[in-house]
Image (cartoon, rainbow, N blue to C red; front, side, top):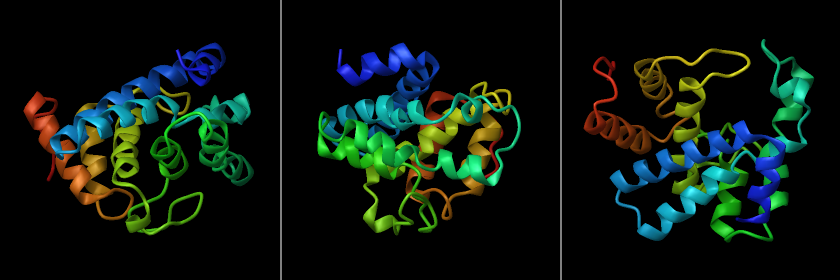
Length: 186
């Protein structure tokens, strides 16, 4: 087991569970998109580590049942950079870049660097969609798990702004193949 994985398991088991789910879904989406076996393996690792920086964020923020205020939101926005700094010397470069860029948006308004989508690895754009899907369909302090159809509709709604449309299309294809949701507004 990787030393960072041991740290995460000891610190926040739910963070690890979310990371494992996100990594598996990322790899499944990447498979639909025709990415290589090596890229799928890197996505599994990136999924596990993508939120590693959250171990440096206060539990009061992570466990807050309601909306975050401006200062709390600013603290949370540091987790991609903190995660990158934690993992960069012990994982493949692409995994570290995915950790750093997984909250960059397709329209270039994301964080931490407001990068245009052309500067964000396709693997990070895939992980971002898988991360959002898992967050919506899992119980969180601020919201109970919502239905798969709701999550897929959110991906469609945010396609072209927050999410890469090609990744959303592949996710819908995967959902259709797996029979996840009967009613998705496309």
